[in-house]
Length: 599
Image (tube, rainbow, N blue to C red):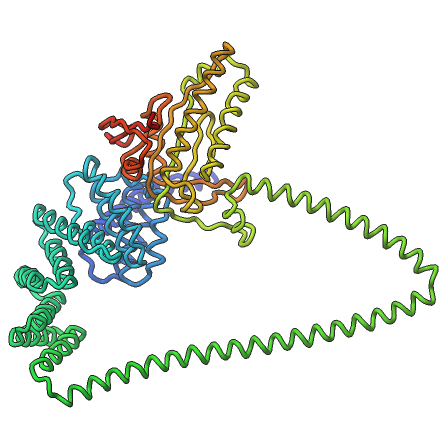
């Protein structure tokens, strides 16, 4: 019986194995089909799309295809953004794996930049949109996004720039998006770019130009059948013609918007167009008491709503203050009671001491000894605490250490502009073969102590050392500290330090190090990793690029990327030597410059 059961179990296992593989293959196929469906925007229901994306993301995680995982997370963030869950959408982009997005196909990268900037626009982080879009353009110049339609990213960039008050720059971006969409024959993106151009024209008072843009959009929208935007386009044309004084045309356009919205059940569009029509009719017939009274009523009604909101907030605040006063009174009564109890205890103790003098004297001597012991203990504890805090500040930035002590953890933060410095000793391996371990460590320690002093002078954050490599970053955790120019000057000081070091070692007939050094500026994420042996670290493609600047550099020189060069190129006292396009491992060809001080 035992051998028979074992044989039966073996048969079941053999049958189960292909079934499990078949199930896994079916799940993978389903997840891939969902990814394709969502990437092609075939799902209009944002809530259902988000649910599908979550399930597909779970299956793709198990499959281990990182690019598909990043793509589905980008799409999920888009749908969460549309549902109003902006914080949840933003959290999805904090995944460390997005640092490797440049290795994914162009479609994945395009959706990443598009949806990330959508979320940042929803959060009002216009400066970050500016930075992210510039990274996308760099990839489109010579990277994997070359030839990709980035008109949607350019439109998001234009919206961010316009929100910061730079209307001329925004117009240039929208026009670039329009031309790019035309080249790629993307009708939808052409419409979006034209609507943005019309908005800028209207904001700057160029109403005829705005009218022309809306009429062009109207022709394109009519070809695609009804959309909410068709109603809005009619309404906007009505408003433009009203401002131009063409009241009959304005009425006709608003009537068309109302009729179209009513026939399709688009209630919000009908309401907006009706309001627009009312103002056109008011402009044509200025003596209209009924209109004036209705407008006054609406304004009063809005003020009443606002006053009710203010009243509700005030009542909540007053309730809070009343409860706070009551808590304070209770605490005061409790304190008074505690004081009365202490007085009673003191009185009783005093009577006991008066009747037991000798006992009190002996007790006092013991108490004095105890107090001296406690004082010494507290002094020792404080000394240990000072040592611990000193070590903590030596390991972590002061601001991060303070946050860690206060909350027990430190938040991961994103910095839009950070300048990363990497250095590496040339010939380290050959020197390690010629020096004893103690001599080798002493040489490295001497150099790194010099570098640490330079970092402290320029208020640059040392991140870590890895063997003979030294890594530091300016612009974090305090963005005002370690600006790009400061990091460049620190890098030049480091090379000066190494030149002096080399001269002294040569004079003594000793071996010496030479150093390559590279810089790159861009966005990074910074924070504490692990729960033991805390380490403040930084992540992002900016870090990888800075490392490539170092490895592509030359000994005794400071090699910088285009982004760093653009920030300091007009600084007097510096000389730049263009190196052209240099092939950087894993990054392709990149523009680089050597920087040095003017004689």
